[in-house]
Amino acid sequence: MARIAYVNGRYLPIGRPAVAIEDRGYQFADGVYEVIKCVFGQPRDLERHLDRLERSLRELRIAMPMSRAALRRVIAETLRRNAIRHAIVYIQVSRGTAPRNHLFPKNAVPSLVVTVRRAPFPKPAEIEDGVDVVTLPDQRWKRCDIKSISLLPNVLAKQQAAEQGAREAWLVDADGRVTEGSSANAYIVDQSGTIITRPLGGEILGGITRQNLFAAAKAAGVPIVERAFTVAEARAAREAFLTSTSSLVLPVTRIDGQSIGNGKPGSITCRLLDAYLQAQGLAAVI
Ligand SMILES: Cc1ncc(COP(=O)(O)O)c(C=O)c1O
Image (cartoon, protein in one colour):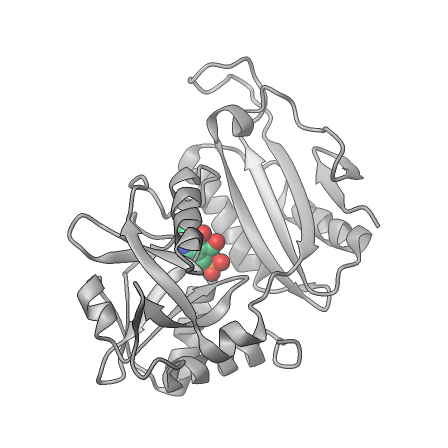
């Protein structure tokens, strides 16, 4: 069955040309996006994702393309038409279509595209053995808190990581401190069992999974300190992991080719992963 996309008021087969050449998303990466997980057809954390979408749009002075209630209906209808059990919903809003000019067009109508695909959850071996990350310079802009579609540095970092045999790149600022992954938040657990992760700010995206992870850690009595950590600290950590909507809570067992802890997923990471899977209705799925 061909996948169906919602494009500016129409439901179309995903392969059909449907976006204007002068869409500013295409020409300037002038837009934002969201990625929402659906389990048994039900979106998870939908309101938080829509909150973040609205915030990203506000920061860039792009109007919401429709009311929140209407957007919920479009998401539900796109899910229904694609009939995928465990899915990832992708929402993209650009500033709209206008003759190419850096300045904001007057009276631009934002473009909205919604697509759905099978959720690319981690493979069992990745959860059981953990994954490799490599550290690379963070070459992104200073507003990584906005979920902008301008992802070129993230794309280049992820590609380089893959070419080095790693699942993810952890990006490192000019002071040698990890910001986050190319498409996930980054965490270590120190020798005392405290989780350390970068505080919110322009250097990282405020992950929805990060919010869930904080709630799971609080419920489990695991302390979290929000501060930047260095690559050296990460290599000396007891445990490491990353979080994102599609990678969930994923153990990291090697950084730059060096084993973390005993080289196996850490006990705190595994506890928090289990709590997260329970909370998301994913325990029987993964
Ligand atoms: C750069 C970056 N950081 C963090 C995340 C994690 O965010 P979330 O947990 O909302 O998926 C993502 C997700 O795509 C990301 O691209």
